[in-house]
Length: 110
Image 1 (cartoon, rainbow, N blue to C red):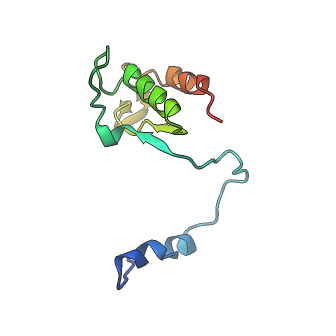
Image 2 (cartoon, rainbow, N blue to C red):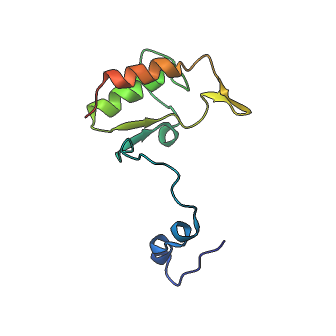
């Protein structure tokens, strides 16, 4: 599929993907809440002046969760690097995903 437009801004205005996509399969969408996000990809986990080794690890993501909570960002994305790229079910030991979920919930953004 291609979308062609005379002006770049018209590409954003196109609803062709919506029109050609399948109907929404979710019955209950009440859990979906829009919000602002901290994304590790933007800074490549380059943190300075912290008392831990920055990178794709639990401490770095806890730091990002603290930053998000302090600055009114509702979400933190764990984009990539937390798992084996060939098997997403194989989580890297440096990233404790269940602990990060609990840590994030403890911040209780509302």
